[in-house]
Image 1 (cartoon, helix red, strand yellow):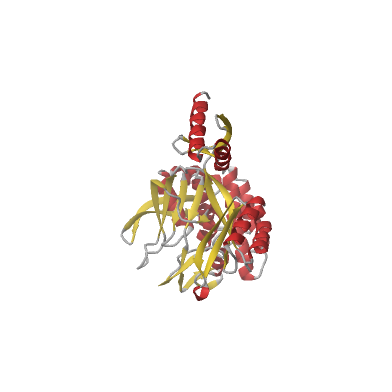
Image 2 (cartoon, rainbow, N blue to C red):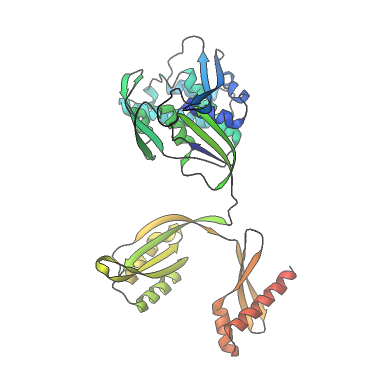
Length: 391
């Protein structure tokens, strides 16, 4: 299962809690968080509400008495002494460390000296620990989220009136895609940002079937974009093959011949490239040229990029790290009436095994016996089917 957060309407700790509580289907686990954190005077209330006419779950954390001022070490000690599962303690601690680093950067301090005002209070503790606990309970293989929306305006905080997006939120979201919306009001809180960047990867949901959904309400009801987080639990489609990280090297050339390209292909394959291709293209000023592509293992990329520059005449190479999917395969050497022929076979997603005789073996056998490559290929496939039946 994959867990995906749609945060188009913003994100905060209580919004994530509401979405996960609805997705989980029970408020009992969330209600156990204050006791697990040794916060006996704190309770969690879940209720149904609407945001922009959309029904959602709202979570409110209530406490009796004044909250002590906490530093990072106090929060980490609280988590370590809690009865939460170890992975939940670890994830929550990482969220607080990110918050401390962001606040320290914004205020010119150090993480251990930062006073946790809002985020050290009971509601933030429950928001963060509860989100980590409910996510852990769902046991997703992967957690993803999309770009986060940022709006203008100001927000009242312990340090006074702060511009939006809040400075700590901006610090936390460095490197995370965002979109700017023309509306005032805080859409992404520091707590929400810290939870997303800790628990999730910025990516669209993988193809799959939606199993359950949950919608968590924020505290505000904005005019545009419902202030909700949507959570999706998806059964990912079974991929037809195993994934493998590879690197693609690409260059375009307008000062070489077909013979030189054929020589470059031979050299690059001989030096360990997984695959090489070239195709005609049109370059600047309407000049005809060639696009040369090399697929290789990431650790070989630098070496093969140097080979491309050496043997092609190109003055530059583009690198792109990607993932490819490959079917499980094996190679058998079979004895046929035309001699030994290697047969590569791949296993398809439905379990069917597909054979493919090695062409170079077929070519040499055809020349040796005065037959066609089709004759040799047919003999090899027949022998392969016969050997498969005896396995």
